[in-house]
Amino acid sequence: MANLNGFDASNVEPNVGFDPIPAGKYVCVITASEMKETKAGNGEYLELELEVIDGPHKGRKLWDRLTLRHPNDKTVQIAKGTLSSICRAVGVMAPHDSVELHSLPMIVSVGLKKREDTGEPTNVVKGYAKRESAAAARPAATADGSAPPWKR
Image 1 (tube, rainbow, N blue to C red):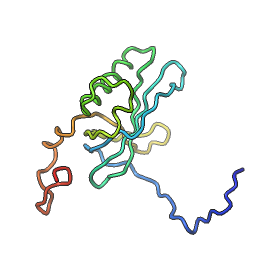
Image 2: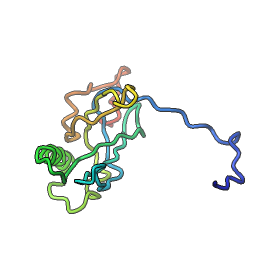
Image 3: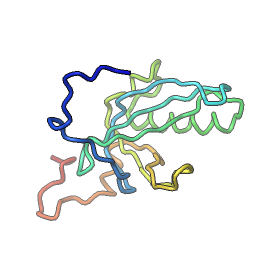
Image 4: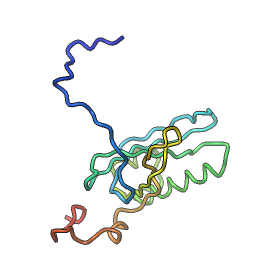
C-alpha cells in the first residue's frame, strides 16, 4: 500500500490516452538514453527517448531501440547503421557517451505499425536525417503565406 493522504483527484485534470502521431517527418531531439539488457539476457540495447520539438505534435515522445550487443551479427550491424545515421544527423561522429547525442535537432522519419499484443497502431522510428535535409520535403510557406516555424 501507499499513503495518498492529501491527494484529491477533483483538483487534478486526468491524463488522456495518446493516439500515435501520423506517419511523417518530425524535428526531434534525443532527451534520454540508456543501455538495457535484452529480455533474453544475451545482449544489450541502447534505448532512446525522442521528443518532437516543432509543429502540431510538439512535446510528443517517441522511442527507438538499437541492439548494439547481440549474438546475431546482422542485428548489431543494423543497429550500428542506425546509430551512424543519428551521429551524422546531429553532427557528432565519434561520441564517447550517448548523452553527447542529446538535445541536438534532427529529422526523424516516423511510421505506423500494428502492435503484436493488441493490434492497435503504434509509432515506429524509420530513420534519421540532418535537419536541413527536410527543407525539400516541407512547404516554403504556411497556408497564410508566412514562413513555417522551422524557417523563422
